[in-house]
Image (cartoon, rainbow, N blue to C red; front, side, top):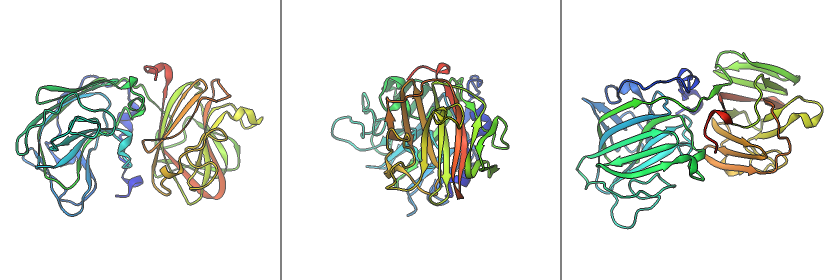
Length: 377
């Protein structure tokens, strides 16, 4: 799939965080029109008469995501998995394939051994389940998920397998709070029926920094770069700066980046102005060149990022968490850099930088959550 072009995050849904009331039940298996496929083939997932089936087609893995994004919700369904088979339920999945940025509930028929962060019913890679009540292959399992951030409760076959405060977990607190719901097809037969979702009130209170159509709220703040809206993204080319009108000190920021070859730029925070140099605040580097001193995701001049995480030419999910002297950067759902040595602790702007002629950087789906709008991390 062309990841950048296929990103279908609902601007309306994401832009109204904090305003969604308890919704009416949604039958997610009423139509395939409620879903979109990432990878695989046309037969990797089918829905017929309310039954979702994942098939092995020699084109797996494949992923099926709801077209709408959700933050808080109640979800119930029944699933049946082939013997020794495995799948996963995605919660808050991103649209660029970096599924580790959200959560995954492991659904499998592996038996034996102790419960672990990789066993059936786990929050995969992170939290072992309290129990593994999955029934044998060929039998239906009842799954109920209640996500009311930061509280996540999962029950399988009427037994509680997770009762978590995500904000208290050292890794899960950095996972996306909004995204798609979905399933994996890893090559085993999986069936799902009676899948009903009821949205709960949103609580993230994210602020959209970009409306996807024009540069409302943004202004040039130095340099000679060209800034324009290109395919629903803010595209910067040349050498210069584009500042957003908001001022914040502590916040969470998320966005998608895509760059041309060897493009150089940055995402500044706590920015006051281009001169004197100290007024620029701090910079998250954008440079998709593995081996460079400061690659994409580095906190410039302070903490080098993990260049094994960058994917040149693809849409990359960037998450920045800023509190006082601390900053944490995640790239595609993985820790990229962190520091507790920020020197500019003050309110300031988010500012985008383009820093090399003949190249371009696209910025898409920019959302900021002020620290005082949510429970502290």
